Image (cartoon, rainbow, N blue to C red; front, side, top):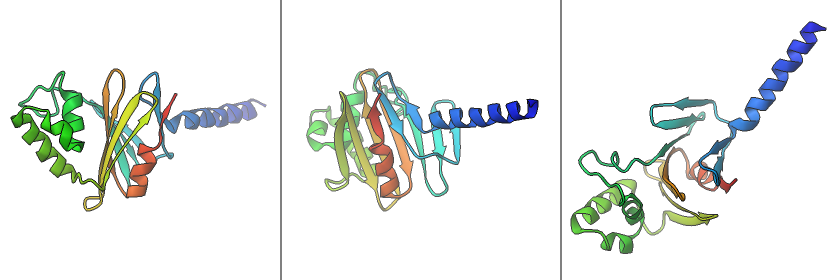
Length: 167
């Protein structure tokens, strides 16, 4: 009887932990639904989710760490949006506009590979670079900006981007 109880508890704990493994809570209002990974690893400032042939990494944007020599505190939202949008870039100081253009080129941003949408009040900007099999997703939440880097196919990138849901 004692062994049956142990097996039941172990089995129940497996189901409980896996039920939460497929949701990453971003804030009080947002979460990401994602397929069950092979591995989840946490670094000092990022969470890495690994699959057989793909992965994604999540971090909250630190405006002091985007570029080591530039503190973008207070400008981080406008700067990141300007990577995806020429009109937003034109509103920045010339030197910062050049940095944003350089980053846009690095991400491989074109008019054909950028997706923008809203989830609740949050704005989502994504770009997928087919040549490098990688993408960037920025989530502009009320209190912070989240960055998700994806490595894999466009389908896998879109699965993560469109897995962003309201809580």
